Length: 125
Image: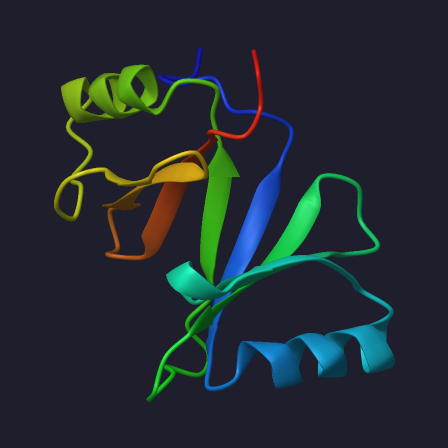
């Protein structure tokens, strides 16, 4: 039985130089649909053609090409993080929260690949 229960969602997070330009590229070339730009967070999300899968575009001056971080949706990030930590999973710093939007926590698999948990704070559960 898994240590933590995940939602049926995943966001593939990419670092890009210009979120607006990248969003237009993904829309024009792959038919993805813009969900929102959150300028104060340097973040954009796009709906892909696969149910439950979104593409997240994080703006960085020097993006790291080829570094995709899967972001797994959870209902309660505190419970999920505690369960993974109890199982010996290593996290990178504290859980980060953008009030009224999202809480995220980065962790690593045994080979050092970065993964992330995210709790959508815009949903009423």
